[in-house]
Amino acid sequence: MIVVTGATGQLGGRIVERLLDRIPAEGVGVSVRDPRKAQALADRGVRVRQGGFTEPADLAHAFEGASQILIVSVDRMGEEAVRQHRTAVDAALAAGARRIVYTAHMGASPTSRFQACRDHAAAEEALAASGVAWTSLRNGFHADSGLGFLAQGLESGEVALPADGPVCWTAHADLAEAAAVILADEGRFEGPTPPLTGSEALTFADLVALAGELTGRPITRTTAPDDTFRAHLVAGGVPAETADQLLGIFTAAREGEFANPDPTLAKLLGREPASLRTLLRERLAGNA
Image (cartoon, rainbow, N blue to C red; front, side, top):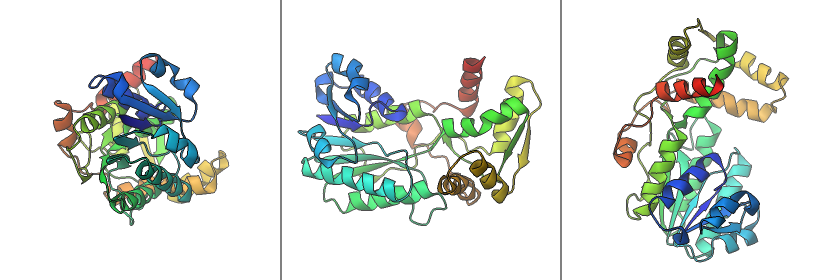
C-alpha cells in the first residue's frame, strides 16, 4: 500500500493519477482533509481516508498498513509548516511505513533566503533522524508561480517585480509523473534527489520577452525596489509575514538558489520536461 497525502491538491492529485497508471488501485491509498472531494478516487478502488497534518489521530488511521507514504508538503511557510511536516513524519513512523517520500524544493537549505526552502531543510532533518528509508524530492520551482507573477503584466503591459535571477521553472505535471516513477520503484533514491527541474533557467526578463513574442504585444519588465514590492503586497491585503516570504523568492533567486538545471527529471520522464514556452502558450490559450 502506497499512501499519498494531499491527494485533492494540485500536485498530490496528479501524483495519484500517474501512480494509478503504474499500480492497481487497491495498492493506493490517499489521506485527505475532506474525503468527499476524493469520491471519484474511491469509486475507482483507491482507499480514501480522512487525515490532516493537524490531526495525528486521523493520520494514524489514514496511514494504517502503508509500506510507503508520500508526504506532500503543505502550502504554508514558517513554524506552522515545520510543525505539520514533523507531525506527518511522526505519524508515518508510528504506522510502520518502511519508506517515507517527501515533496521538497530545489535549494532546500537552513541558510536559504527563501523561507520555504528553510522549512524543507527542517523536514529533511526530521526524515534523516527517522531511522527509516526516505527520499526527498527536490522539486524545481513550480512554473505556475512564475506564470502567476507574470499574469498581471500580460494585462497591463508592464511586469514590475523585484530584481531576480534565473529560475528552473518546472511543470506540476512533470513533477507528479516523476514522483509516481520514484514511488513505483522503491529503491530509486535514498535521501535528497538531485534537483528535479526543467531544462532551462529563465529570469522574469526572459519570461516577459517570451510573453511578448507569443502575444505579439509590447510588454516591459521593470524593477521594483524590494520595499516598494513588499508595501504593494501589504496594501493589497497580504499579511506582512507572507509578503516577506514572497519577497524571499526574489532574494533567493538573486543568489542563484534556483538557477541550475539538472538532467535527472528528464531521465525519470524519458523525455524532456515541458518548457516555459509550452506552458505559457497553454496558459494563454486557456485565457483566450
